Length: 405
Image (cartoon, rainbow, N blue to C red; front, side, top):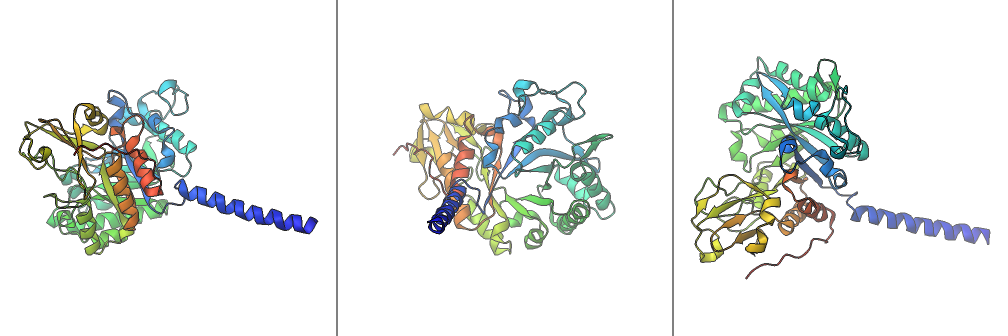
C-alpha cells in the first residue's frame, strides 16, 4: 500500500506540474515575444499626472520599460530633466510603495520610483531611451569624438553615475538609441557608433541590452546596412506609426496593419526589413497609443480617404476614447484598424481590437514582440496595454467593439 501510495502521489505531482506549466504559459510567462513600452518622463507635468505608480499593478504585463528620455547635448550624454528624474520629491500618494521621498534623499524623482518598481517586479527590464537631434547624433558619431561620447553615456547609464556622488546603481538594463535618422554620409558612422556602444557596454557590464528605434522602412535609414545593425543590437523597434497625420490634408490610418490603404503598413515595414536581412526575432512592431484628427470631412466612404482640415497635434487614446459616445466607430476589415466619424470630424487611432490583432501578428510572424509609444496615453484601466498582453499571450478577453455599418 505504501508503494502504491507513492506511485499515486508521484503521478498526481507530475500532473500538477504540467497544469502549473500550462497556467504559466497562459499568463504570458512562457511568451517568446517581448512586450515593451516607452515611459514618458514628462508625465510628471501632465494633467492628470502619469507616474511610475500608474504601472504599480500593471507592470507585470511588461517585459521592458524604455524610459524616455536621456539627452544627447554638447557632445555628451546628459540627464534630460533632473527635476523629473532625480530631484522631485514624490509624496506617499504618488509613490509606487506608498512611501514618500525624504528631504535629504540623494535620488528621488522618477529614477527612485523605477527602482521601487523593479523591486516589485524583479524580471522587469528598464532601458534608457537616448534621444536627441539627428545633427547631434551625427556630430557625436564622428571618429575623433565617438569613444569619448560613448564613454559619457556609459558613465551615466551603465555605471549609474548620474552626478558627482550620486548613483542609481544598476537601475538600467540597457540603452535604446533613437537616432531619427542617419543620412547617407552618416551610415558608416552610425554602424561604428553602435559598435563602440557594444564594446564599451560589454567592457563594463556584459549582457546589457543595446537596442535601436528605426524608421518604418530601411530606405529611410540613410543607406545604413540594417542587417549589420541587427547583428550589433538586441532589439530593433519599428516606428510603424505616423503613416497618416496632420501633415497631409486627407484622412487615413495612423498605423494600419495591412491592406490597400494608400500609405505604409506594419506588414510592409516588416517585410522590407526581413528582405534586407534582419532576423524576424529582432523586430518589434511599433504600436501608437495616440491618434490624429481632421475636421470638415465629407461623408463619402464614412470620412475615410477624404480631404479635410487637419487638427494640430496628436491626441491620446484616453482622449479619443471619450469621443466614441458621440461618433460612430468604423473598422477596416483587412487591418482591423478603427476610425471615428461623426459627420464632420474624423479620428484615426488604435483600439483594443487593433492592438491585439497586431500583437497576434507579431506572434504569427515570429517577430520579437511589440513596442508601445507611449504608455502614458492609455486610459486609466490600461485597456490597450492589456490588449497587447492578451494578444502576445494567446488570451482572448478583449471585449467586442461595436462597429457601425
